[in-house]
Amino acid sequence: MSTSVVDAANAAATAVSGAAAAPALRITSLSAYYGELRAVHDVSIELERGDVLALIGANGAGKSTLLRSLVGLVNHGARSHTRGSIEFGGKRLDKLSPDQIVDAGVALVPEGRRLFARMSVEDNLLAGAYLPRCRPTIPRKLEEIYTLFPRLRDRKTQIVSQMSGGEQQMVAIGRALMSSPKLIAFDELSLGLSPAMVDEIYQNLSAIIEGGAIVILVEQDLKRALAACTRFCVMLEGSIVLEGKPREVSEDAITAAYFGAEAHG
Amino acid sequence: MSNDDLYWTAIDLANGVLSGSMLGGYYALISVGLALNFGVMRLINLAHGDWIIVAAYLCATAASASGVPPFWTLLIVVPVMYAIGYGVQRGLLNHVSVQAAERRGMSPVYGLMLPLLVTFGLSIVLSQGLLLIFSADTASIKNDLSYSAIALSADLSISTLRLGFFVAAALLLAGLSLWLKTTHIGRAIRAASDDPETAALMGMRTPHIYSVASGVALASAGIAGFMVGMSRSFQPFDGPSFLLMAFGVVVLGGLGSLMGTLVGGIVLGIVQVLAGTYFGPAAQQVAGYLVILMVLALRPQGLLAK
Image 1 (cartoon, each protein chain N blue to C red):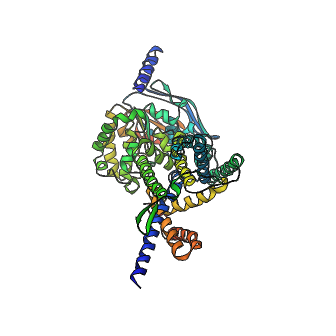
Image 2: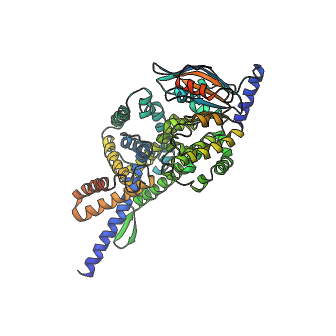
Image 3: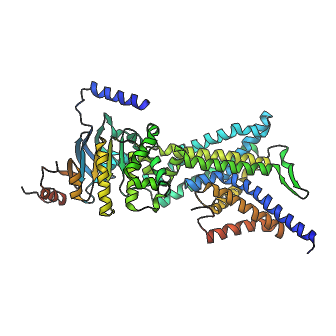
């Protein structure tokens, strides 16, 4: 109840400042540092509701760091920090701690899934609904997730470390969905999974997108990422070197940017 | 062998198992806090035994100052111990944890050492503080239950106090297991102990969560301190022996399994009493540690751990 009051206040603040047309997510000149090392350099991105952004790039291009900056983990570390700003729904995410960012409606499905290995499927899902604002909707969200991934319903008491990689990825996605995010980021969604499993997960992704959330997708599989997204950014050495809409840019140009070659034509 | 011999052999055994189990409840109560700190949070709290003694002094002082029956002092001592546990974790231990060391860029090995050193120091500060305030004389909580017993047959009886501790230990451990398993904060404690960074991604404020866990651990130590004071006399420097005992029980039962702590306590109690009955008092301690070593060699994860 208090959350809806805060939301209303934020909406009012947005309206008063005349920024009603501001994008839902606005990243402005974001740089991220690990000690002296700059992993992300001067990145600006704007996304609207319903956008699916594919972040494309080789290992070490700064994609994961960008996602970790978004959810507050970079600022949370004592030796890493960000510069620039991240605004989401009228809030400056770069000023908030990770738990406040989740409360603001941002969820990350981390690389390598990072499940709570000794806990059951359902305990992992419930851990995703820890915030007070998420607790009233637990039964409905659980039902949604079990409908999305029926095999999780059959295995809700199983300890997650005994499950296959694909099933674990389903738990990780479900856990992130438990907090009813308005922005959900997937880090290396298909890494280490069988092609059939990746197909299944991408099918379910469209159901998540239809829910109206902004999706950011970090993906090694260029074709799959381009097929699923409405916009893409290619990152190279911490910077965005090419951005656009998938059908407007040739795949050759994207591949060239991916490898850092000069794009001709 | 005559019938009489058989009877007495049976009585000896029954007595050993009975009073050993009751002793197990006592051991389990002493170990609950450590089981939470060490078993669930992976924090080795070397001051655990000293906190038990602190609680024992608090109960004894509160009882003699107020004149109420000793049991009622728990109403004050348990919340006070919770508050101390929360505060010490929040103000001190959270800053020297493995995660805190990693955030400062220190190696995890160093991060494991930090809480050891700090809680060892805390142990010294606590016992010296008690010495300053209460002197080295032994203290105890005066009560009428110490010598009372319930007769089961002509030759078999159990101490009322020990039975009470056994029931208290079973209830406390069952309650805490249920709390960890089914509540949001319990789940958060398990999650934050397993992977603090991912726990933060679930919206969990890990410093607060660790502090609640340590508060509950010290509240349990408060109950243990009351029990120690009710059943024996104690001194400022008695803490480490309780710590050692608790380590044995937690390792025996299995890390991360609270009910294992009760089983570990009971196994240790029965072995000690039987060894004492058949081989004399000297064998009692030796037999206990032999069992711990055997379990470590054959089933290093402990009796009840998965």
